[in-house]
Length: 349
View 1 (cartoon, rainbow, N blue to C red):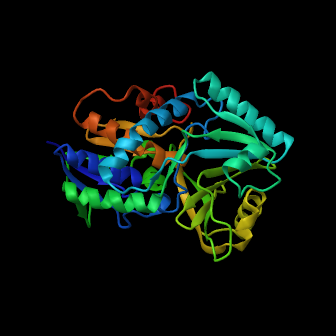
View 2 (cartoon, rainbow, N blue to C red; view 1 turned 45 degrees about the vertical axis):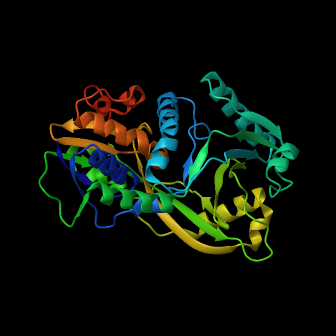
């Protein structure tokens, strides 16, 4: 048995602590604000295909492998808020449609299937889509989760498994750094490798008489900008802007305006919704958009840098850390996340 301390109580830290405790290890978790941070304000998409990008093949493979673990991960937690309704990606003009065509061709090359549909066919799936939607993709395999319900379930499951929530950082055999955007200050090797990437996110609630929210996640390409709308009980999460401004957590008026305008293009009915929350979060970015999961030195494991994919990658990250603790083979897709890639010969060393 290893005595483990996890620094960071977001979705990654909680998942690692829970899975390690399930395996019989002694686990303490330290975070002054457990179950908050970027995980609290996330949209909740589990979307390796619709997040795919040329040159990020390893991330697509890692995300797909983690998505395969999600049903059992959620089942072990109980009521974790997993939705299997799927995702629609909508385009409003020819340029946005061309981008979706490139995405469909790219993921097809990687062995993933998507359905290209007309705007009319998309509205048959989701009647609330507006007339401006000309075409799009239906991706039934890209799922979503209620991030706040998930965090609550993870905290409860961790406590039941024996995780101790510590007020200070205790002594341990192994320390896991899982502090998201703040991880760069916790080890000198991470200082140049983890940075905060800010994003505003909105929560809207359907009022009496308004159209109900869609059943599927709606992602949109609106004049080159990306927006997503993720269903919640009687409402939506709308996100997310993306820019770098250090550790500033104040939402910008311009970012909120752009999100509302773009979301209205996709779902005109949201103008009747109540705007109930405006929040900003800090994603933990890495130089190549892959997370950092592996040994930093004897006694120190890193599990951070998940950028936009912390929720998606939680199951495979937890499995990888447990395998490292027990000196077992890690999932093959996780080898690309080893921080050793930033050591000898790396421009980020």
